Length: 486
Image (cartoon, rainbow, N blue to C red; front, side, top):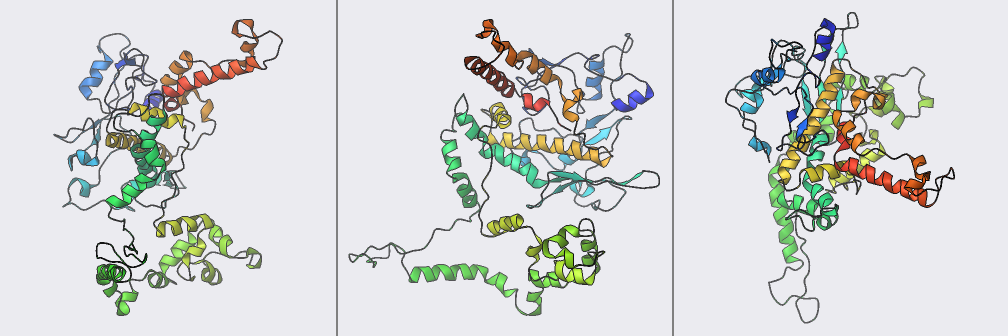
């Protein structure tokens, strides 16, 4: 909207022609949270709020008859009739359906049209389907092995540049992992921080590093079975005198029989030809030589070279071999090889093996992550469910903006760290409050130096102590949330 007004030579709303706004205490991840980097004495510089009503935006704009009046943007997000957004959600169940799907963009200056899938708003209506180029989708990929946070691959008409499809995608793992971190690791960071554990979180760090959270997770799913074994009670040291303790072999046999009985309904479906149709390997082989195989193999990278290199000696292949050649398919197609997992790199196979054995990968996280420490403290004395929901929303919002930017043709700018627009107002406030020291200053006598032209010994120690103090302050007030990189 700002760019469109600039093209038309019209003024646009900004912090220079709008009064500051009051800080808000309800959502730590939203703009102008009280105590955040951008807040000063209870106020923050004005910023466009898409959820502000037309009446609120006109009130912020001031008197239309005054000189220098700048009209507000004619675009806002309107909620469904009668729907109210929960103020402090602790679960997705707090968002009432179908009302939560009823948001829409309203106004002449809106660049996009927002439309929730019809079947979400009304289950009796048909869904808009992925692949229908009348619609562009923001897809939430619910899959545990997606190796990216978000991705967008727009397709355009090469003759005129018009976008044909501009779908954006986000991986569930990148969002849900943030929610899990808030639930499990925020209490740990608080316990190890300056203020200590919040009330009711005592010992959270010990429980976390002992793996009790993972044990409790599987326990809540009913996936924990206590082992059946020999507990000798007899005077001879190896037999059982009573029935109060489980023993081998009788109780173990009963335990195994109980497990088999639970699986019998599923095992019965594997009889005969119909049973073979349910086996993964047979279903895979049935697709060999089909158009599905051709489309998949022809789309595997640049002529499928990535897959071919993993299992083929390329020096023995014809120079212009294609991924759809019969000889290549016999070696690389997941529908023909004995074990399709052979096409997957070693690390991915390792994670699949661990997953198949119910081994949870360790949660690798820096013990002193300044970024996460800020958020852990921002949600102190708030329910863990609220922290989880808000952090997921914040990350989804940032990925959504990023990927939709790609959808309309924007590309990464790896010089972005030097772009002033990537440093928000809060950064400059924090930088002014805690400027990083200059090492040469610590050679001055006023700072304990001796003016010999070098900063050594105690002088260097003093410099590093001041540098640490400034960086600690910046991290504590959330400076990392006011910078972007591309």
